[in-house]
Length: 325
Ligand code: SF4
Ligand code: SF4
Image 1 (cartoon, helix red, strand yellow):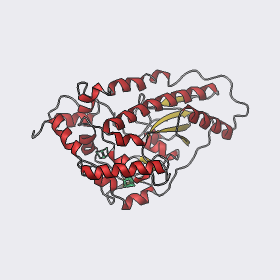
Image 2: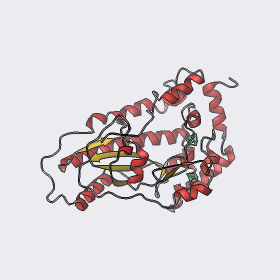
Image 3: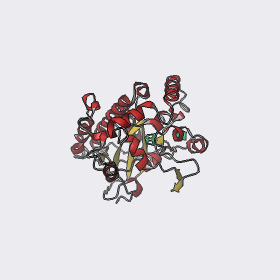
Image 4: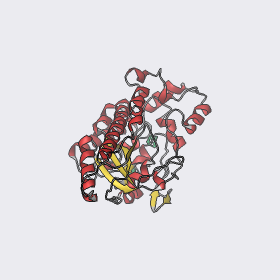
């Protein structure tokens, strides 16, 4: 099956990021600067090398024998248990469709498995660098778990190919939606009932006979109609109003203004994850008292900092772009 989803290549080669870099008269995208103060504490490029190290292991030899009967319920249970044992926070299954595959990529297997790994929400109280480090470390975990799960499925006698940040052939949102991993929020990220949008994904495409799940609709999009928290906290105002949406394959999508978001998320030394962290779904469904307490503390800090334009945002603007330029 050939992919039909147009995609943006992330990282320093992203054409949109390069366009903004030229407009700003910069020679590099600050997030990837190797000489920025943060590299003394956290080298983004070194972490990226850790997830790309899993790329050559994404596929391999398939065992000649399969479990007796190969009952889909039994195979699904085995795979789910293994994925959770490897460190996945939740796992779902769906039929693979062309919209889940990026243009230029092609897969033969019939099914897709989504593995999500939750981020430690408590990092939001340690600042933007701690949040960034956590996100990148969780991406490495997603690469490891999807690679090891694919190897396990091949050991059961079925084809299985891992996909993660080091390979980038799967379009995450349609795959996660179909696998029942959550609902799309106004901030453009998928919201899981247990972790909000605070997770990262990995995938496996496979011919193992598994039972496809279904979308998990639990009221997020209705809430987003009335809630404006991410909209009001986004530093550059990249999140559009509740009335400004399109519908794709029956799913409402508020399109974040990517160029505006990049100005805050890639053209400063500080990582921006604010829309995800201020979303009440961090605690709204799971009702976890620890998550609720972290949320309340974070929102108090944001109130003091000025919600949309906290002090760090202005300071970083001056550091990276030069005051008054
Ligand atoms: S990542 Fe930051 S700038 Fe981008 S949409 Fe979210 S809050 Fe706004
Ligand atoms: S903060 Fe509110 S509007 Fe934004 S995604 Fe979460 S629930 Fe929806």
